[in-house]
Image (cartoon, rainbow, N blue to C red):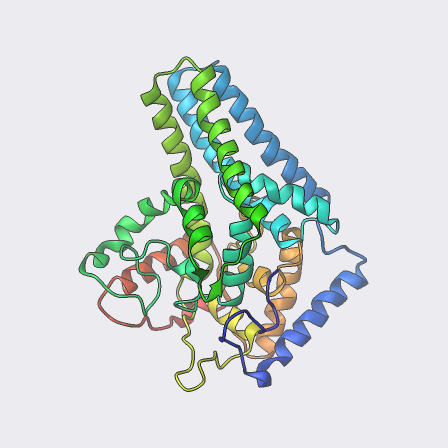
Amino acid sequence: MTNTSGKNHSSLRFVCKERSSFYRTVTKRVNDYFKENDISKHGNATMYFKSLLFIGGLALIYALIISEMFGVWTMFGLALLMGCFKAFIGFNVCHDAIHGSYSSNKVVNKVFSLVFNIIGANEYVWRLTHNLVHHTYTNIPGHDEDIDVAPGLVRLSPTEEWKKHMKFQHIYAFPLYGLASISWVFRKDYKKFFQKQIGMVKNNHKPIEYFNLFFFKALYYAIFIVIPLMVMDLPAWQFAIGFIFMHLAQGLVLGLIFQLAHVVEGTDFPEPSVESGNIEEDWAVHQMQTTANFARKNWLANFLCGGLNFQVEHHLFPNICHVHYRDISEIVKATAEEFNVPYHENETFIGALKSHYKVLKAFGSDKAYLQKTPAAVA
């Protein structure tokens, strides 16, 4: 479960009680919005439509590919499209389900959580790395492993060791993001599962999770590697190209959307106090300082990104389904302004992309810290 109280599983705590009134107020106002409008915080018809569209779309694309009804270039295009649909399933279906916000029914949430394994990632490992660690210790170097996407290659925090080749990272980082998905399938989940701890949280897995890890990985390999090779009359090298580019498309979409939420101009990378070892800030205010929205008013971004372009609202209210984020964002923004708390956002996807590019370039220099850019704060 996501920690939203400042209590955590390591010695690091959020200790600024003077600023806790922001979270109490914004929570009350958001809760009042749902009560006054008699709206469930969970999924609605829009959520069910998106689930059917993206899961059904993936199944259809998969069937078209293994049917070999088309020429090689059409098949290549379908492979790229399949990678994108897998990312969209992660954003729009599984992300909410794993947070428990898809439905009020735990069984429904569990079923759609397991779909995460079919797109290549392990839902249990994601629960640990994302729900527990990332949502609690957002952008804190040494704790949030989401800013350690490629240690030694891409520098995404001011405390990470700088190396000469990183001065070019604003150029090579984007192709590296494309490797995120294939790394997830063959490396990352195993590494995270078997390392002693994730961030500062020690791993202590139940026996069933060992079985699930290997069973669902084997199922993924069977669906996307073994079966296509058995039923398709296609040279292995052509299949390999399609498989790799499917993952490059999936990885690029995943990598870009996630990075635009936390590694842009204006977001903080706070470090624990030397004296106390704690973060001298309230947990909710910390989330506001380290998180950013993008394209908040763009209907296409809202539809495809599964609320990940509303990361501010998501980090404050991960128990609320993403289909409601646009409506409550006005409440959150107004409350943030009232309490003099930052509300970071880039108005467009391109603007967020440019902002991320600038941060990559700045962190790629040999300077230790990146100065805040006020223009990134709305």
